[in-house]
Amino acid sequence: MSEAETYRAIRLERIAPSFREGCEIVKLPRLAPGPGEIRVRNLHCGVNGIFDTQIARDAVDYVKIALPTFTGVEAIGVVEEVGEGVTGFVPGDAAVSVRFTGGYREENTAPESAFVKVPEATREYLALSSTGVSAHVALYHIGALRPGETVAISAAAGGLGHFLVQLAVLRGCRVVAVAGGPEKCAFVKSLGAERVIDYKSEDVAQVLDAEYRDALDVAVDTVSGSIYDAFLANLANHGRLVVGGAASDLEGKPEIVNAPRIAHAIYYKSASVRGFMNGLLTEHWPAAREELFSLYQSGKIAVRFDAPDFVGIEGVFDAVERLLSGRSSGKVVVDLAAPPSSNPE
Image (cartoon, rainbow, N blue to C red; front, side, top):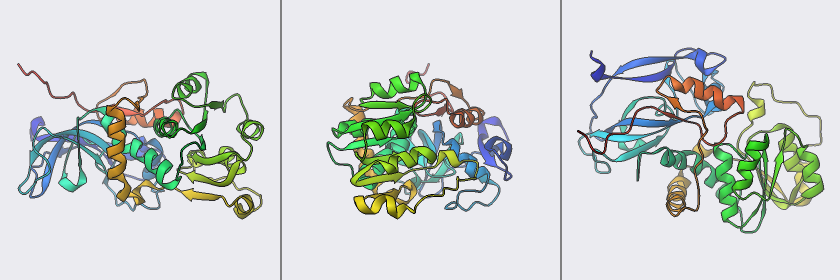
């Protein structure tokens, strides 16, 4: 089989401590789309390092895997071929996929329902369609954010965090953000945050107690640990703490806390702690995408990408480890292929 008849993808071959150890790059035959299917050549994929690591460890409770399994969630590319009966796409359309196993692959042939048509096959529309949608749903639907409220956001310089900050600012909210290091803090400040707490040089709990005691109407946390505790302790009356992850518990050893039950923290404030699992909220995705695309096209929201360039399917492994290192700022994306030439010779 010639190179032109194949493409490459990352496949989890074994349960392992890390994504790199569990996966292999495999060659697959290029498939013509069947009835109701389209074939997309992927240009970019988005990286979700914590999810990828937990998949490699078979530690994602809501995803049941059978080895071997393909990997990755987010990819954007160009439709190259459509099957019989397809009405929503034609060759040349930009298509994004945000479903597990559709991400870390150079091509994807699947039912057209697995894709969403977007204006352009760019990194920006990939990030908006995936992480941007997560931020929108977490903040506006689960957090029920109202204009003028005070919002706390952890990991605010990250792919999710930088969208959360901007969306809260657009609602006229006061944003208290947590990030690590002067460069990340300066970036988050530039997005409109009122106060940025550098957790590497400041005690988050002490800052909130001194400056925002019992003042957080909404808090969005993806870290857990002491930051979660500080957010919970400073919820306002009717405050909402949205739990979108627990990065500090990645090693599978959650901290055991001897403290009063959570009821004691929320009862007298009529506050709440709310879980955010984007995969259970798909009915909210289309409206979120529509608003995010409009905000981006009108220049009201920006998309920040991490500085290193990760290229080719091989670059996914380094990109996953970059995200896990805590050094990344903005959305981590891998460029899988060069875009089609607009002026072919």
